[in-house]
Image (cartoon, rainbow, N blue to C red; front, side, top):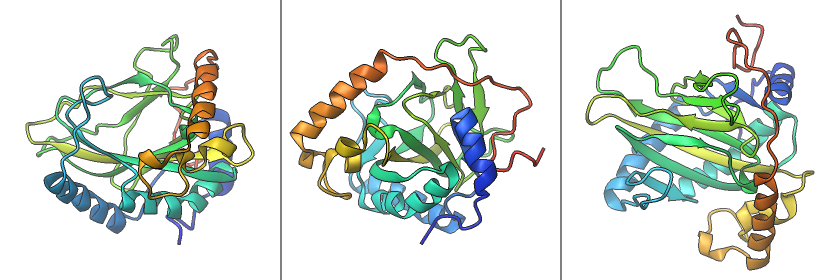
Length: 252
């Protein structure tokens, strides 16, 4: 099983290599995205897990390694490999149910997020028209514009990006009271890269397990790798205002 079987590999791989991100339309089939969205609401009602103060999105329901999302992580690997031209190990999944007013600050990610996907599972903007709460990508310093480039997403759409290199963020969720948006984050590492040995399964014995099962030696190796990443700031590719961030760059 794969998310998409018609990924345009040449265009996608080239775009991802040059820009370090690429949007795949309907990466996850709409029906599966719809099921996962409904699941996120049931899960929140049954077992609310708000992020704590000091976390990225305090108060929003967020879950590490959920069994359904880990299943998406596992089945999605082949599609992501076709889209990037890389051989990958899955590391972990994380999903979040965003609420009105949430802001995701500009940041880069840890080694287990070397190749990451943020996928929109579903949203409800309570009737607000001409609005999409997309993700921004851009350089850390903002030298090419503080706002960066916003990538809108519909349910099932996913942005693949190099999480350790690409600065990414979301501005304030500005929609009517009661609005929400569910995103799932699927993370991978390059099998042939520097992090594969200790970041495979995010240092756990296997997918689907709790973060408490992580190997201590692998955690330490990942921590040291993260410290090295922080000390390096790679240049972000030039942002073109007319650039189309889709898998087929010829569709302009």
